[in-house]
Each structure stands twice: as C-alpha cells, then as structure tokens.
Length: 132
Image (tube, rainbow, N blue to C red; front, side, top):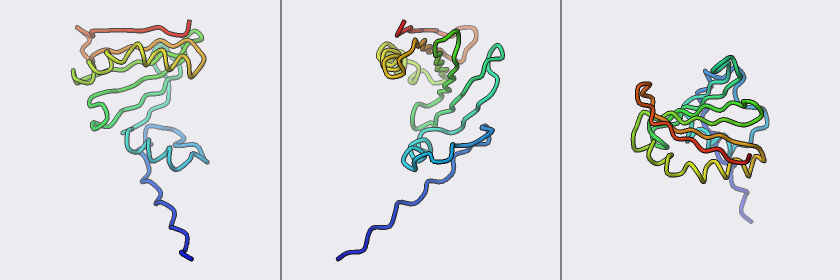
C-alpha cells in the first residue's frame, strides 16, 4: 500500500497590500493559486463618485497593461477594462459582447462592460450592456 501523496504546497501570498482585509478565510487553495497566477494587485475602496469599487491589476502574462475596475451602480454591475497595451484592448473589444452576456447570465443581473485605452484624449471607448 502506498502512502497518501503530500498535499500541494500553499501558493505564495498575493500582493494584498492594496486590500484592507486580504483574502477571506476559507478561500479554497485552488482559487488562491489561480488568483496568484493572474492578479498582480487588488484595491478595494472609494472609486469614482465615492462609490465602493474593486480594482484588479492583472499580471502582464495574462493581459498585458490591463486594469479592471468593478462597481455596482444604480443596481447594475459595471466592469471597466482600461488598457495601456493595444493588443489587449483589441482582444477585449472583440470578446466584449460574449463577456457581457456571460457575466449577466451567470450573475443574473444587468451588467455594463466597458473597454477603453488609458489615453484620456482618445479613450476608444466601447461598451456593451447585457441582462437588462
């Protein structure tokens, strides 16, 4: 009889320096590992217009130059992708209709998803509303 395999090692902690609380107790190790592989940092606090907002900075290997902001506004979820790398912006713009539809279906709420550049003079804003 072979002894049971050792459990997988715990993933290194995420850079939760932006987060006031860090990950919730009881978060499954697989979820923490996936977050560790994709998220560079997390900020939770007052966003635009004083609303509570979460912002994820994605690692460059995932979608280079992408910041994701998430807030609930007037009963719907708003997800903003701000891109400093054109290739990432084009990828997200192409995926936008399916992404908005899938989020709305899975969350069972109205969702507005926006993709734009980080250039204030030419944001190339594209948005999709789903689940209305």
